[in-house]
Amino acid sequence: MQDKKIRVRFAPSPTGPLHIGGVRTALYNYVFAKKHNGSFILRIEDTDQKRYVQGAEDYIKESLKWSGIQWDEGPDIGGNYSPYKQSERKEIYKKYLSELIQKGHAYYAFDTPEEVEEMRKKIESENSGNAQYDSVSRKYMCNSLTLSEEETKKRIESGQPYVVRALVPENIEIEVNDIIRGKMKVDSGTLDDKVLMKADGLPTYHLANVVDDYLMKISHVIRGEEWLPSTPLHVLLYKFFNWEEKMPQFAHLPLLYKPDGKGKLSKRDGERLGFPVFPLKWKDPKNGEILSGYRESGYFPEAFVNTLALLGWNPGTEKELFSMSELIDEFSLEKVNKAGAKFSPEKAKWFNHQYLINKSSEDVAKQITPVIKQKGHNIEFNKLIKIVELVKDRVNFVHEIWDQMSFFFEPPVEFDKKIVKKKWKEKTPEVLNNVINVIENIKPFDANSINNELESFMQKNEISPGLLMIGLRIAIVGEAKGPDIKEVMSLIGKDEVIKRIKFAIDNIP
Image 1 (cartoon, rainbow, N blue to C red):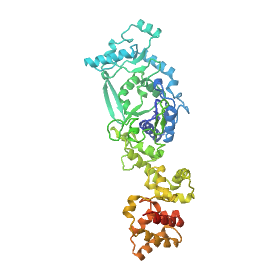
Image 2: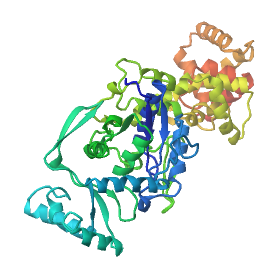
Image 3: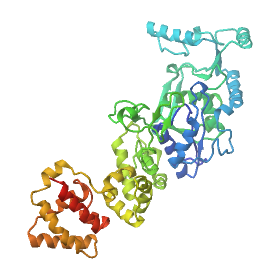
């Protein structure tokens, strides 16, 4: 690791809800910074005003906080390199844009969007090169390279709309070093002259991110693979500004793929396939559409983070469960894969299950208490803890626990017909009727005593466990689910057990 202070940034654009791929990028930046005692910066890249969505910036912040990712510098807490919103840094970009133009590394272009599109179509139809605004096509377009200095000045002063483009040199090789992907060489002839400043006077990502990364002393740019094709231009901009010695190291993360591996995981895949692709629920301010989130679906933030951490990063061991502090200790960019990672909704549920069963039953009991009260029940908290201990390993989410524990609070009013037909024998009512006397005399009424007395009853009367124990489960639970029936009996109490047995005998034909 280099000696200079590690400073990384997560720079989302508030154009909608934050995709889980974005959270993963933030997570990798965060754990990398913390491992090396560095700083994690949140920078809002809001220069695309046409696509700006109200509420998206707050959503991004809340998502990161819920995930346990806290920034050291940012728009709400400040820092030594503020402001941290690009829309508030316009004058800074103008200064550096002027420098590029003066040095001959950028130029004015007056072409309308329609003219640029016509140029691209012409190249495509003639198959005469790359269908882009580049070192070839710029020679016959309307820009300050083809117009006289006087004409250029006249157009600008008259208020004619224009953009500023990067002047990509011809016939040079650009070298990009990437921590994850290694060394890459790109022929400048394949690049287009990207727009650095739009017609509205705001910079594009290409200019703003380079200027901001330099001024904010960013040491490593860790971002998604989709930015890899733009990186040669960013390397060029560092050279144009003579900032090569201060250029950050790059690391481009692999894509997240759909569960079937066919294509990038998109914002629409979750609703189509039935799982969230956003950390939090999102309501579109324009059309009111609601998209589901991991938080509202019942995921623990730790499980969500653990899921994302292993989508692209391999610790090199069999270990799968990592706390945030363990991730910080063990994470390295060198162990991030080049290949895309398939997202598995089932694996995400598995992670949540692991965190649920590893949580204390007391914590889970506290979380399920509001549901019990909502259902109109009260219970001694210590008893609830015991119930939770019996059922929590049967579910993936806290909200699913009620279905596994409802019979502790509510006696069955009907019985599973398939189980009754298969397991409720002709002798079952007689056996259950006889066992009532045994149950009445069990003291203390705990699982161990219940077990001993029922075992004794079965041996004396030569009754099979299949007949008695399944009969008891049907009578007490109503179906063939639930933990050890002796534990259930001890927790609902002697009187309730006898009451349920009698009801079953009277109501099962």
